[in-house]
Image 1 (cartoon, rainbow, N blue to C red):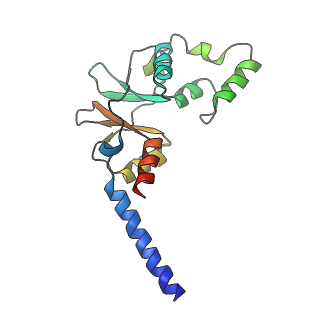
Image 2 (image 1 turned 180 degrees about the vertical axis):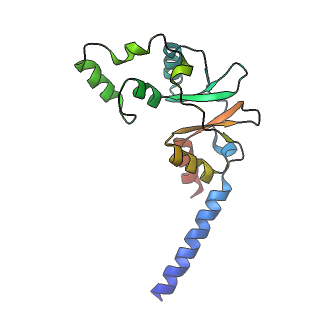
Image 3 (image 1 turned 45 degrees about the vertical axis):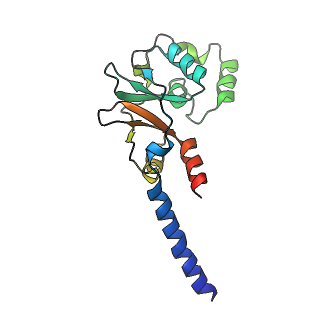
Amino acid sequence: TPGTFKEIYSISYDLALKRLRSLGRAEGIMTSPVHCLNRGMSLTAAASFMAEHGISGAPVVNERGEICGVLSEKDFLRKMGLPTTAGIMSVVGECLTVKKCLVSDLRGISVHELMSQPAIAAHKDTTLAEISQLFTDHSINRIPICNVDGAPLGIVTRSDLVSSICQMV
């Protein structure tokens, strides 16, 4: 009957989701090595580094090579007084309507003064379901993957997560 079919489908779907959630681990989808910023680096150098590598955020490491924060576009936007959902056209629009450039106030500031901290990080054995939950709970787009000493091994982005799930289905 249609009711029986619906019940079987529902059970099968739930089992498939559980299987998908338990299959993937951070180690299998992370980008490695990861581009990191140094805590004492200037924002000018950090922005140039990120632009050169085509990334919108990066883990920040301290003098011991341990992750101590993450710097992303959202941090820059927040400091410029824009919503963290703003895009490049929002920045251009604001710069064209005010008498000074919004980023001029960022000169002379170091990465550690702007980065989000503490860093939300995970280990290589963290499941994709757990990573997905971290993205949702903390409204973040990337998670550094660290060893037990807090040193970066790689990074998982929302794009990595979506791509991996699409490949599993």
